[in-house]
Length: 408
Ligand code: C5P
Image 1 (cartoon, helix red, strand yellow):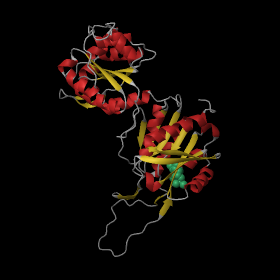
Image 2: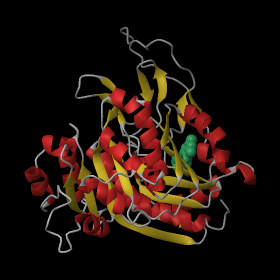
Image 3: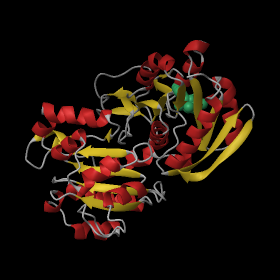
Image 4: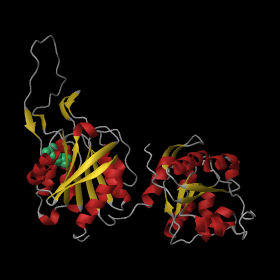
């Protein structure tokens, strides 16, 4: 994890209700504090059955509140004090019973009281359901969740998978890092709200035979960071990814492809329905012109096999050539080993795009940090060295400021 303090200065009221997933709330507290937030834990009576306030106090560095009759606040109104000092309330885990209480506006315990009493226009409420799959699927729960969302809460998850009860299905609480990232995203400026952004990422793989192929060292990290940053900025994001081993950023629609041709065929029909296209993928320039259906065998041959190469379609140039009304605002990447400015400027001309982002290939492939150089018709500007997500956020802000003259 990077040492970015994405939640510095934010105060989170973390509510725990009854559920096995309370153990994940301990990890969530660590993740939030490591990201710079201060965390005030409030536990319901049922939550106390699953994890102790001692653990939660030790992790948050603050005494836990469990009762509305807690005499610590000077005015004796814990629900008012706690909900007004918070920048966000996160209920994780949120049990079926607690969601039902929220849906009905009940206020029988401190946590429900604080949720009800929060100044809703300033303090968002995040709810991370955690329960058995049958409880989640029950029409009563679905009704309550829909009501809670309609009343303005943000419902995060649940995920699907193995459950503590031994069953498998929907109802697992999201992981601590996913909840942290949802909160981080909430606090990012919404500079791309209402925009649709299409992104390519990763390498492509050009098959020679069923077991071999031509590819490159691109990890996809930069493109995935751009996708995450665009989603955090409020955009609807489609990510077309080559073969990489990276988790899909929260809220991003992902399409997996393998070859350059497949990437091209996925991107071209999508391009006209997007406002921005960011081509970060390291697309192979050539592919073997023939695919061998069977593995090419050595079989004692002395002469190495040779094969012809065919040129791959240039995806970025193809999108940039679409008619004006079908063409998104295009951003290309240039990974070079030397003469970055000259090559990036050449690419700007050749591809016919308004912005090229240059970086040095060997200094970026597979790494978590990078330095970017923005090259457009007006000149060059360096985005200082940083982790890829911070750079992606800077790039997203640059893109947003350049497209403001285009109506949504
Ligand atoms: O000069 P080069 O083709 O390497 O330019 C790189 C830029 O073009 C990147 O944005 C890359 O994603 C894009 N590209 C593409 N399709 C190709 C080759 C490159 O979209 N076949």
